[in-house]
Image 1 (cartoon, rainbow, N blue to C red):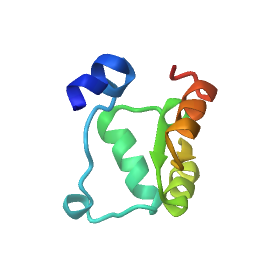
Image 2 (tube, rainbow, N blue to C red):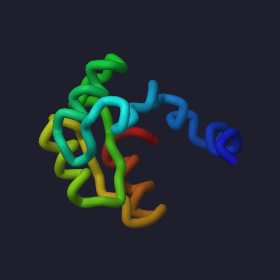
Image 3 (cartoon, one colour):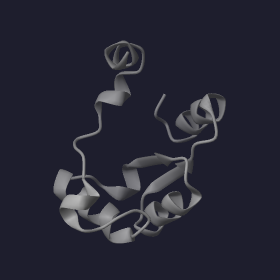
Image 4 (spheres, rainbow, N blue to C red):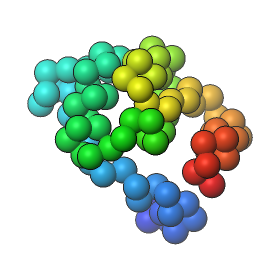
Length: 87
């Protein structure tokens, strides 16, 4: 299913890695985990879009300078993508 999604939405290939909270000793919504992830994978927070279904995590990402949206459903997410120039 993931490969099919990548075919339909090429931007899904853009994530550059995973930060595992148990390995780094930080958890969302601590702003430091977002900063660490950005630094580790060479991301620019102001041009990165974070999506989560937890309002606290979205606020943590925003506090770290990321663009962030609350996932509430596919229709809204498609709109969020358009608003952020992803599609």
